[in-house]
Each structure stands twice: as structure tokens, then as C-alpha cells.
Length: 288
Image 1: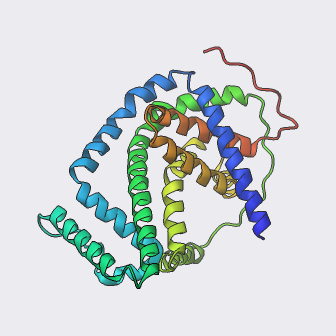
Image 2: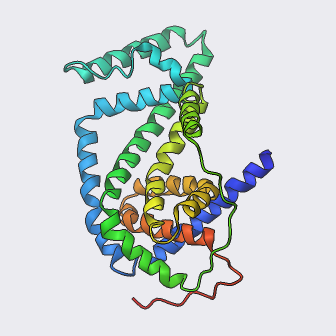
Image 3: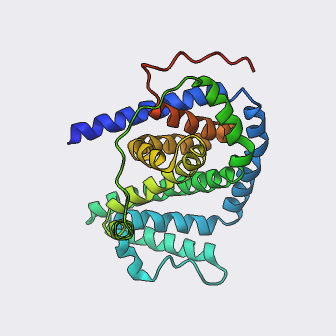
């Protein structure tokens, strides 16, 4: 089982890398790169301003998210996120930090495990702080992509796969209302399990924007049953693609191409998942 899961995620990683590489190649066509370079700085600067002027809120949100990831629904016992109230948020955080340092100095000789836990908690808070910025920025960037970039990316991809032939995938049985309800309840209950909630939350954040663009890119290409079957088969690749895009969103200058890369990589991912490589002819070269 573990070997099969390792092979599945390794193949998904390679597929995501291949789609991103082809997306970078195609970004120079149809005016994708300069449109992306003009649009992407707008939401990025807005979120940088928000994170700078509301740093206390986002630091506390990241710390709460890290605690939730490690302890699951047990963290809800303290009355929620606890981010409300009036001013003095930064002062309260300084008081909390002072209390943590005092407790650390008091117990460091006796509680070595506490030191390890503190390091893990700080690392998790930093991870979620960066992930929150990347997720919020990428979500804002995606808002107009359907009208500004997706159709252009689809036209470029259609040229690459001009003679593609769909291959059959096993059809998924339709879900009843009870199956949908049980699936939602299952995800909600999984958030209550310590550590496993980290996997659930992070995977949702990585898949959210790529999954939305995946749904839109399938319009006019695949019907509802085909899209559902293909999305189920390619879900690990969708997760890995979302992870790579979040990482690229944090890299200056490269993040200017994120709108073009997102749309083009999703189009390539869909067609590569449904193409029959035996029947498909080689892709023609693009000149513009």
C-alpha cells in the first residue's frame, strides 16, 4: 500500500512539473506573459499592504491555524479564534510572547520536550503565515482569469493537442444526496483528529484554486461525467500543481507569470490526462 501511494504521488509530482514546464513555454504566446505581468502585481501589493498593516491579526491567525493543525478540533474548546476585541492587539501579543519566554526559562531544564514542541509550533506558525499569504494572493489573482487568460490558454493548448483522441476512463457512479452528506460529515469529522487535520486543511488550500480553474477549463471540452472521472484520477497531480504554484507565488518576479502558468498548466493537465498517446500526432510548433 505504501509503495503504491509513493509511486502515485511521485508520478503526480512529475506530471505537475511537466505541465508547469509546458505552461512556461506557452506563456510567451497569445500575449499571456505581459497580461499576467500587468495584473499580478495589483493583488500582490494589496496583500502585502494588508499583511504589513495588520501583522498582529495575521500572526495570530497563523498561530491559531498551526495549533488547529496539530490538535484538530480540540483547539475549538478555548472559544474559537479569539481574534476579536478592541485595540491593543500587538500589545497582547507581546504579553503572550513575554509569558511564553518566562515559562520557557522556568521549565527549560526540566521539560526538554516542551522546547521541541515550541520549535515545532513556531515552525508551523511560520509555515501557515507564508501559506496564508500565498493562498490569499493566489485566490485574488484567480478572480478575473476566466475572462482575461483562460480562453487564450485554451486556444494555445488546442494547437498543441490538435489531433488528441480521448481514452476511456472508468465512469464513477453518481452520488446520492446521502453520499454527499456523508462525505461532508466525514471531512468535518476528520478536522477533529489531531495532526490529520493538518493534511486536510493544507490539501484543501492547495487544491482550491487549481480545482476551480480545472472546472472552468473543462467547459466545452469535457462533459460533467468525464470531468468528474478525470478530476478523480488526477487529484494527486492537482494537489502537487497547487503546491508548486503556491511556492512560485512567493518568489519575486517569477510570481508575475502565475496567472498564465495557472491557466496553461491546468489546460495541459486535463489534456494529458485524457489523451491517447498512441493515436495522437505530434504537436505542431507555434510561431506567435
